[in-house]
View 1 (cartoon, rainbow, N blue to C red):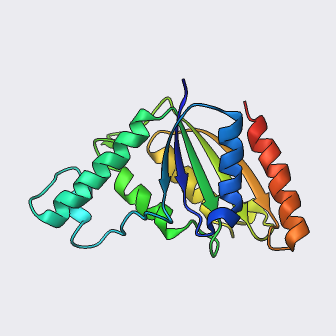
View 2: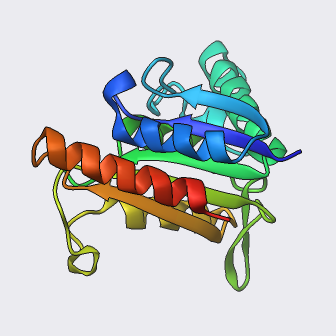
Length: 194
């Protein structure tokens, strides 16, 4: 049975188009699901009190220990999954800060990647990622304005996840009819992914 780790990062809850796309994926691709809703239960942003705890060495201290324990749990969820499913809304041209915080805890030298003489090497291999991307406008991705998707692809590639499928619903801020059409079309595409 395929195991999915679902990362929801939209602040729009039930009205979220990226969440709707995730639901379409899960309906069409059954399996075990572990879910992280970063709006309902955000991963804390990195601070001076937690930075060392998310790294390779776990120093002493309560804040460091709590950060290390959370990072260990998040990394274990990644390692246990066959498919990583990300809800990726576009906020001010970037990913939600909650999703970036999640990656700050998951990217750990010596665990999810390592440095070699040839450069960094991802250690999270043999996994697939599906990105359910939603954005209010319509953008030419080659222009480099909408940074969320390239940023997410870079972070995934850095940890070794290179099999990435992206389904985008765009133009959702162009009115209710345009939003529904974009969501329906993208939901059909994500459900149809092999």
